[in-house]
Length: 309
Ligand SMILES: [Zn+2]
Ligand SMILES: [Zn+2]
Image (cartoon, rainbow, N blue to C red):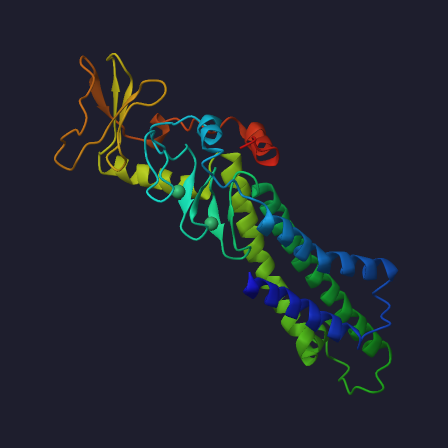
């Protein structure tokens, strides 16, 4: 978080310091002043909410509730899986954070930028925080471009103090000035590059929610895909209980009495496979259902209005 605050404060400081050389500028009106103020303040305000909101820390008091929020799918989340630090059964979709030193409900990831976990309760604030940063970078890029255009136009209309050959084009002149005023050039490049990174990250986060998953779960699904490639996942059907076999997780029966069997590299099952069932090798991830994907509208609603812990 310290690095982030330094970056934003230095960026804004350099901009404001540079701005005083160019005022009054015909390109900056009263509305722009107001917008600049809001856009500079927004990253700090949204950072405050994203970093100070309880992401969904699971305590001894709310543990029972946390268990009820999401069912175990017996593919990526298994019941009776105890957290060694917190000493309780890990609720479905939760993960223990070694930095926060507790389990977090619907854990996405621990974000160093906000120095907090992103989980069930603060994913919405985290998205608004990314949005505020994107606005900051887009608006910064635009306003710096306008300042440069203002200088170029002023110089072109009165070529008195600057010796410019008549054949130099406006476009080249624009870039020459951007780099002649180093701060403007640096801000232009920084905001230009960083906005691409932030757009990419925002699209990734929105896509995860759209598909009813989290960063943590998407990594677990990658493990499942890998296991399918090595022919390690089996579904048992036709027996008294439907069953999944997944070798990298611990065992047991879930709330709907589905048997989960761990199979080692020699094909030995750690649990007894239900009598009369016939095992079928999973060939594609599509054969497994993500029960947490309840349609994109519900998925977004779930993030915006999280359930009470
Ligand atoms: Zn824990
Ligand atoms: Zn954390």
